[in-house]
Length: 103
Image 1: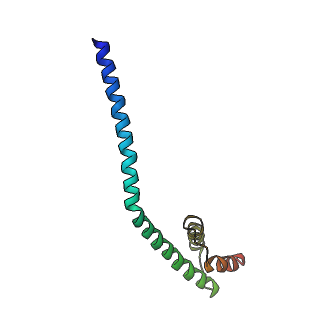
Image 2 (image 1 turned 60 degrees about the vertical axis):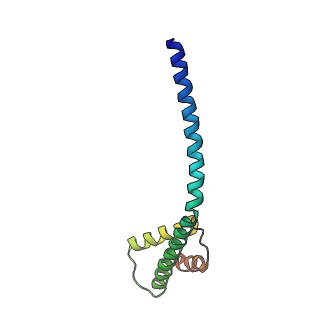
Image 3 (image 1 turned 45 degrees about the vertical axis):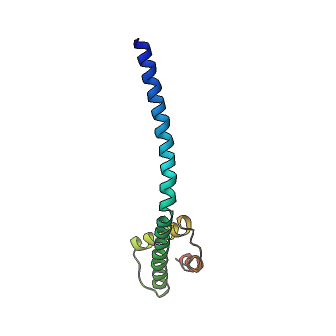
């Protein structure tokens, strides 16, 4: 009797786990599909903000405006994010290579 109850309970737990796992995958697919446009917009905004900052930074460097080590490190971090994470590779890349090689 106890053995049967334990087996039934184990079967119920296994079935519940399989159902929950299936539902989780299904809901994740739906949510990913729903949020994809939002993620794309966020990436576009992020890319534009990085581009604006880098253009201003490079213009300052080109015009001889003093930048302390913290500002320079931040620019390097942002440039890495722009090129590696956001796949931005444009006129900024050429200007960055030209100006920052002189430093």
